[in-house]
Image (cartoon, rainbow, N blue to C red; front, side):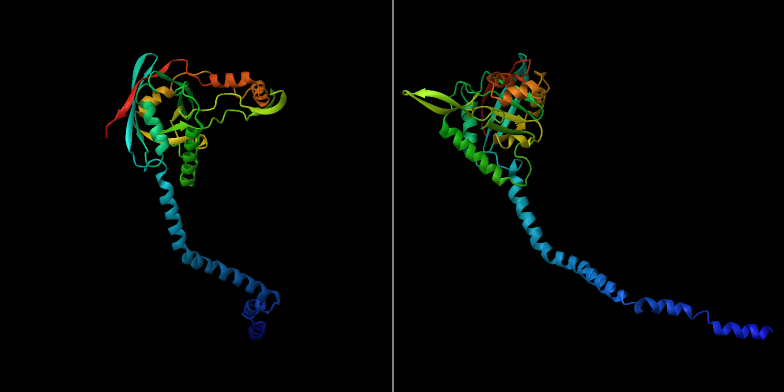
Length: 295
């Protein structure tokens, strides 16, 4: 009886089913198709690093060239001259700001700033705006707007923006820039006027167009200034003084008010006047003395 039981167990061949299970999947018709697709994908994935490795040197070279071209946005630009601004806050001396000027990168802008830093240009003139990101000096209001000057400053600003593509903000922390455009000004609106017995439509600009004397000092990276201010230099000493200016209390900015937005939209002159009062410091911040430092 026991021998029969042993004999009957042999025909069952327990090891046989595993080979059938192992060989069965390859016999299915869909398995080779899936395998080929998977193999194709695997080949593509395996080949992609080699392809990337093949093009990576040129890509890296291009990136290096782009980085080299955009790196001198502000930090690596050569300084050709230095000017100083002695500042007082509330009648008390606050210290000196020394500005290194980029005479090679912005010749017209640097020359403009130097001419205003000598004589009585910026002397006894105020900082009129303190906002998060920068402080703004009023410049010389009595100077007229000379299109030839402002157009050249604007051309230098556009050239600097094109040169600094991908290199971060031109108006980085410590940048000193001349205001070329006022982004807060509304676009000119048409106005019907009588000229020589005829009615004509002329464009009226609400607000004051910058005359190329106002300047700003960035207290942090402020890319919003890149489209309106030409970087002419950077602060090489006295950022602590700039920080004291930025800490002065100012008039509340109410540009978020619905009434102000409607007034600005319809070109109400009162809105433009009110906007110029926003962020104005309560304490007088004055440039008591200024000039050029010898290199």
